[in-house]
Length: 361
Image 1 (cartoon, rainbow, N blue to C red):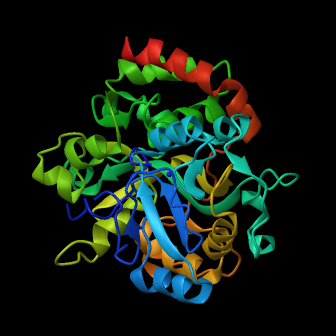
Image 2: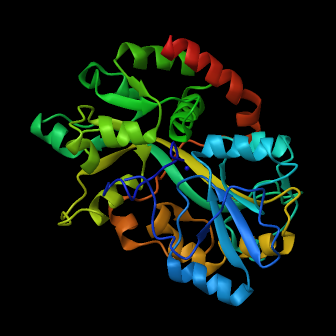
């Protein structure tokens, strides 16, 4: 999910998924600690966890947690691949289903079946023969809309991919660069899943003709261009449609002061693509036992219950608690577009190349 996947916290107050991570140290950027009492997590900038939850893991396991945040998801994955022979840490969190094949094909992870992984919901499990990655969270990339904009104009907001190319929505949508941004790539994959190998390019030609705006990443799209977010209002954003997450509306409620009675933004449910994030034990990790313990922790109930309010994603463990605010303001899409990771692996790079040529040139 990625900043590019940056979801939503600090910048709804300032949104961009930060949360409370005070208990976690900050790596000095070296090649892992090499300390058998320290487990080093490498992640994208959106990683967040509650202080008391990390402290409980440290007390129970005897390991200190050190966190190295390494940019957006795509950047972090690429850097981890480049340093795989001498990794920066022990565990990597934040590779999602849009980039998973790149990590696996490059030998980024070693095999480990986390304790408690049998409680992960079956639809999120992958790589079951080798157990190189463990599912940790899921969320939906969807078009969000500014409720006030559409109410003021007595215009129905779009509900589907088909709606976005209609004349009444001309020059209203901003999305992220699919070659550089996780939500941008997810939105592209959603259109490929919807319209097929032979139809997605024609759809994007229509979308381009209808005035879609493309920016580098999620922060710019959501916090500067989108008129419906708290930050976008301050920045005088003028696009009432943005590619973001189904969990963006509850963040707009939870971090507003005073809290509104209803979310100021909504989700076009017919535009959603389901994203899943994974963690894995890095090949050549210096503290493999600490890394294994941390992977067990990530799928444990305490972390899974804590995670939604910190990273604005849904848990993947059976019986994990979903905050009522999510149910009310940001429910998961009932029928999101999905795509087999193997198909993503086969087509992603060519699709992105074709998309770049079609949309950006």
